[in-house]
Length: 152
Image (cartoon, rainbow, N blue to C red; front, side, top):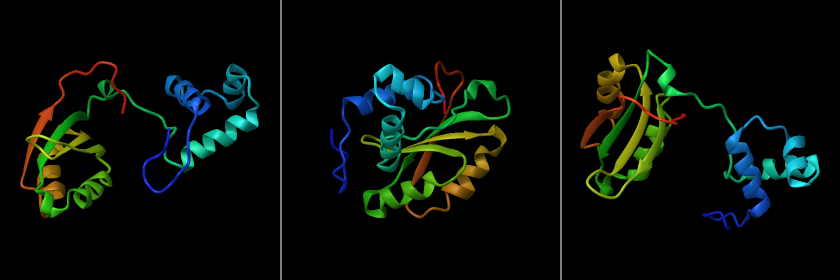
């Protein structure tokens, strides 16, 4: 499997197994992964470093948004004309601390933002952080009432 872009690094079945183990539990120790895959701990450490370096893997703590009473998961759909530079707007939005992910879409809307924010701050976020970006024509908000098996 090749990584897209200019980098020609490859990942193999061993790398995919390491990723699978870490998806189950990101705190799994390298020596435990090594034992499960019959490899040395150094090999696992080097492979994880390679996966991180080439953006195949990011190990981090995830939260269950259902457990937070002061914040809400919100999906924002944006209309952004192609000529205004989807990519630049998407990159800017991805840097905002409230934004968990940005996806470019096909269909009626051009962009999907996953936002974790206090409901009382949503209007200000839309008007002062999204509305000021040149090229954003419109937004539609979808408030998540309940999620199942969702970690962000």
